[in-house]
Image (cartoon, rainbow, N blue to C red):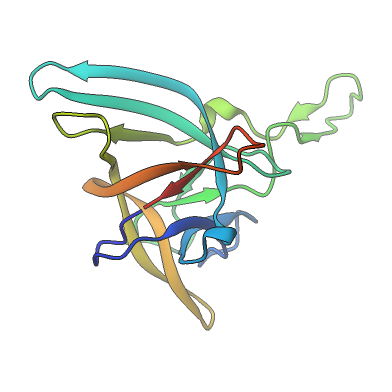
Length: 174
């Protein structure tokens, strides 16, 4: 992923500047071995005949043992900031015992995940943009870093790279 200053970075999970979700925010890393893999689901595509662009919306899950869809939220004390993209601490298959062992209450529904929007410029489908998302600077106690946030009208250049050939997942370079 292009960080906006001409450099490229891989996406990884890291501390959020607010911890009320128990989850992790999407952060950047220069170390490809630290890149997070993602699974795409609920993918919808369309072709805009007016500007000759391919548009795709998709929900994204982090490919790890939690298997949770990316969500967006503002921290409880964050009155002016943008909603951050984060991976909740509980996944698709976690359940809470609601008093009935045979019918537990699910803690997360994949359909509630944030839908990302991707688009290509006119021409060959090789260059991609992630729409309505941008990098923001964050601070958590003494830790300062960047994170992806929902920002209408913004966009980032992205590229996809297939992970290890033994897997069927993609890393995203922004």
